[in-house]
Length: 83
Image (cartoon, rainbow, N blue to C red; front, side):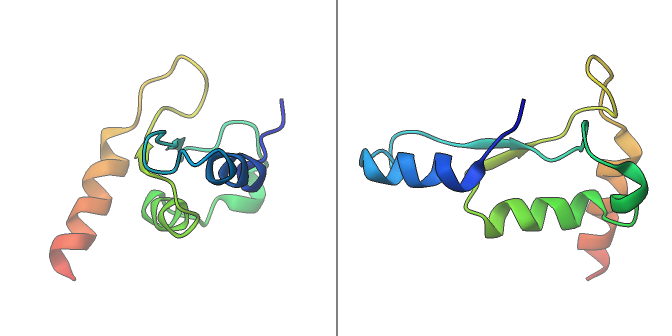
């Protein structure tokens, strides 16, 4: 499977559905090279999703069927509080 976010967002705009159809993005990488993206934090992925006009984010585990790591969420929350 290969997603194309730019095509999806253009289609949503072209059918005048930007106000009625939300795009929710799973920001935890599953099928990418973890060695290349290991230095990208969950917070940075969330900011990128916001930049690319996602209406919301979800955070899942490292593999299909695995739960999200609570420490990922707590770590990002702590960074927000400190800033």
